[in-house]
Structure formats: structure tokens, C-alpha cells
Length: 323
Image (cartoon, rainbow, N blue to C red; front, side, top):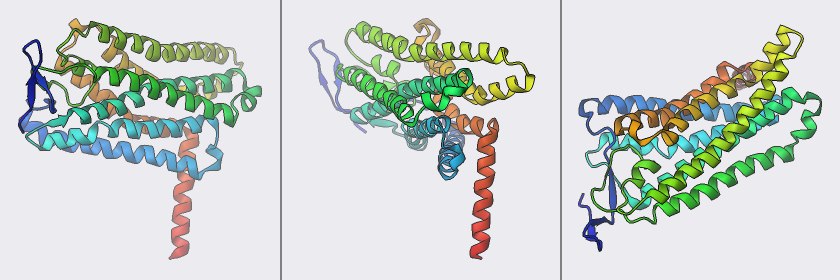
């Protein structure tokens, strides 16, 4: 594929058509194997998250605030991983790993919106657990259906408004020179590096957004869990403490996985990063974590496992009746 370009005033060649996502190009012998591994992972992610949504929808006992947020999280994970993995799979099979600049922008819009919305949603889920454990007598009053919808809507609003503005600003930059991005998708740091202008202000904005809108929800989660742990430790019985902690262990595990990779990616110094390490870390939060989340919530949650068994038994019973 030919790359159209035009000269800018500074004498550089301005990229006008496409980027090349280098990705795993250096792993020629392993690309077929990587395709199979990532395809399997993606299908497990889709089936796992769709299964959680279906089980919650079909079981009225799970129509509670915690599972309302879990449905939102599963929808987010589906969109989040779908914005990256299908194209990565295609690029593992073709020689020309090109993406139009418009396609690159669309990918970044979806990916960043879902990522920031998930940060806010995880904070809302932590607040839900805080109210359930620290104020159990007022839980149904505080976490009403209206409050849950408002918290979820606020998460989506923050994600969309902040990331649409940031991504639009990034793609208003002039891109010139080499059109080869040393990554497998259009993430913010490698795309900003393609700009042929001083990007120090943009990098400051990216860091500011990361600190304000990634760290702020993270701090709210930490504060919620400090209060939760203090309340749990004051419970008189070991059984009560175990039961209380088990209700938030799945969420805590998901938060650790999500924020662990996000913080390493966006807040670590440039001197400690390399294209190879960036891609490995990116695989964690684009491929691995979305697959693990439904597994974590099913294996560590008795209510979901019980509801899943009931759904399967009901389906078998209906099928037997038809036969």
C-alpha cells in the first residue's frame, strides 16, 4: 500500500493517509500461534461477559445495585477489548498492517472512552460495597435505583466528554516523518510520538488527565476500602468478617488488575519504557484482564455461581419438556 504524503513548511513529509501498526511484525514465525491464542482469549472474553449479563438478567435475585454495576462493567469490557483485538487479529494474518488515520482516531476514541469510564465505574462499585458493609441498614435507601443509574450515567459522561476532547486534540496535531507506529493498536503515547511538532503541552495534558481522572477514582476506591476494612475488623465473629470480605474480594481483584497495568502504562517515566515492554503491558489490559474479569466474578462469587446453575438447570428442564 502506498502512503500518500505532502511536504510541511518545515520540510518534513506529512502523513495524510495511513499509519502502519508494526505490532508483532518481528515475530514472523509466531504470528499464526499468536492469532490462535488471541482469538481464543477474545472468544472467551465475549462469552464470559455475555454469560454474566444473561445470568444477571434472567435471575431476579441478582437485580441489585452490585450486579447492575457488574452488567455495566461487562458491557464495557466487551466494547473495550473489541476496539482493539479484532483488528490485531487481522494484522496477524496480513502482510500490510495499515490503519487509516480516521480508523486510528476511531479506535482511540472507543478505547480511551471505555478505559476512563471503567475507572469511574470501579469507583462507583467500591462506593456500593462501602455502603453495603458500613451502612447496611440504610443500603436500600442510599443505593436506590435512581442513584445507581446516576452513578453509571456519570461514569459514562465523564469517560465520553473527557476522552472525546483529548482524542480530538491529539488528532488535530500534524503527523509527519515515518508512519510506522511501534505498537499493535493506536494507544495515546505512541500516537503522540508521531507528531512533528512540540508535544510537551500535549504530554502534560495527557498526564493531567491521567492524574485527575484515573488517580481520583483510584483514591476514592482506596478510601472506600480503608473504611470497609476498618468496619470488617470490628465485626465480632470470624464468619461475619469472612462473609463481609468475600462480597468485595472479586471487585478488589479486578481493581488491582486494571489499575496495576493502567498506572504502569500512563504514569511511569519515559526512561523506563520501550516498545516491547509497552506492548506486553498493553496486552495485559486489552486482552488478559477483560478475559479474567468474568472468571473472577464467577469463581469467587457464590451468588453468581448459584444463579448460573439455576439458569442451566432451567434450560435443561425446558429442553426436556420440549422433547
